[in-house]
Structures are given as structure tokens and as C-alpha cells.
Length: 325
Image (cartoon, rainbow, N blue to C red):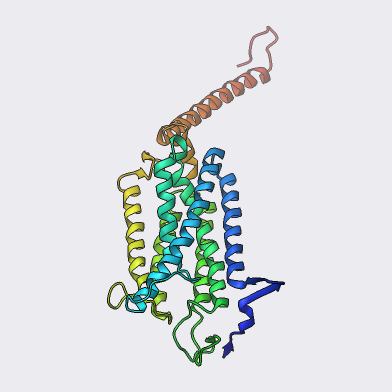
């Protein structure tokens, strides 16, 4: 049985400054996500104008997300106390932060983004998708050291005991951290191997919604119920899964891109780039095919003429200057 050491809750102290492991790991996750988004933006040639706009939007959305994360936790505590006490504290919930942050990001885009920057929304959102589980994974490790978001009581060899508890619980924080890092790897593989522009966000939303719904059955920190027999996070997971399905239907069935309108792009960064330049992807492929065939035909004709000329030069001349038979 593994026992949690309370001193790990505090990473270090410098005078009156106390740095908590939870906050430090959240900061590390955010920095890694920002650096990754910068790298992906350069790699996949997001315009500087779009990068600046959406980077600013993300910073604002993160701040709003933290406010919503605290608000949702206050609502959970309010429900848990029987609607008797409502107040903000230092606790937060990821689902609240995700909902608030994403809503703010979409509203900012809808109101302020114009022209090509507005059309880059879906491309940017898919580049950001791998950044979310990367940052969240570090946050879940922080939850483990903070002693929150723990699992149900267990006598399993992998169970841990947090300070103030007389029993051991499943380290669901670490289970989720592993899942998030694996999901991050899958999204990056899709991005670099298949160069997909339309799937990262949908895969993230759908995968995390399913995972979160399942892991809630192993969570031991009861947070009230919006729907009888279902935790608040499970209800939100169902909504998240519906959003992922609606996005997939909108894109694949109607051939439309959010904030971009009808644009049949072949769903790859290469063909998306052609579409951004106003080039029809199918026409470009057909034109390239025709050009290739013409080049081959021309080359074949040239080779045939050259071979005939060589044969003429190599044939010996008759004494009278004519060609031998």
C-alpha cells in the first residue's frame, strides 16, 4: 500500500512565499501548451495575423476559464450542502473551466474575428486540440499532490492514502493523467502522420467525454447531482459527446467548416492551403494529372525521335553516298 506524503503538497518555500505543487504543475502545463501551439502554428503555417489574434483570445479565454472553474466548484459545493451555502474558494473543476474557456473563445471569434482570421478558426482550433490534454495531464498530476479528485476506497496494491483519511483510495488523478498524455500522443500522431485538419478537436471532445463519463464511476469525491444517479461531470460529458457528434455531422455531411462556410477541402492541411488560395482542390489534382500525362507523352515523343536520329547516324553509308539497305 502506498501512502501519500503531505509535504508534497508544498513544493518549496522562500521566505513568506509558498509555492504549491498543484499550482506549479498547472503553470508548467500551461507553458508547455503555449510553446506547443507556437510550434504547431509555425509548422503548419498559420498566418502571423491569425496567430496573434488567437493567442490573445486564448489568454483571455484561460482567465475566464479559471473563473468558471471556480464558479462551477462553488455550485457543486452549493448542491452538496443542500443549497444552503454558496461561496467561492480555491477549489476548481476542469469541466467548468473547459466550458467557460471554450465558450469565451468562440464568442471572441464570432464578435471580433474578420476575414481570413475568421476563416482560420477551425484550423487554429485543431492545432490547439493537442495542447489541451497536454496541459490537463500536468494539472491532474497536480491534483494528486493536492489530494483532490481522488477515487473510491480500495484495498488494491495501487491505492494511496491522503492526509486526513483513515482509508486508502484509488489514484484516479494518475489514471486520468496517463489517459490524457496518451490522447495527446494520438492527436499529435494524427497531425503529423495524416496531416488532418478536421479531426483533432472532434477526437479530443469525443474521447475525453467517454473517458470522463467512465472514470466518474471510480471517483470518490462526491460533488452532488444535477441529474439523479449521475454526477455533474457525467451530465456535462454527455453534452460534450453530443457537441463532438454535431461538429462531425456538420463538417462531413454538409461539407462546411465553422466560421468558414461551405468549403470542400479534402480535409488535409495540403488541400486546405489550396482552398485558402482560392484553388479548387479537385481541379488542382486534375490539372496536375493532365500536366503529368502531357509531360510523359512529350518525353516519350522526344525519346523516339532521338532514337530514330541515332539509328540514322549509326547506319554505314554506301560508296555512292546513299544508305545501305
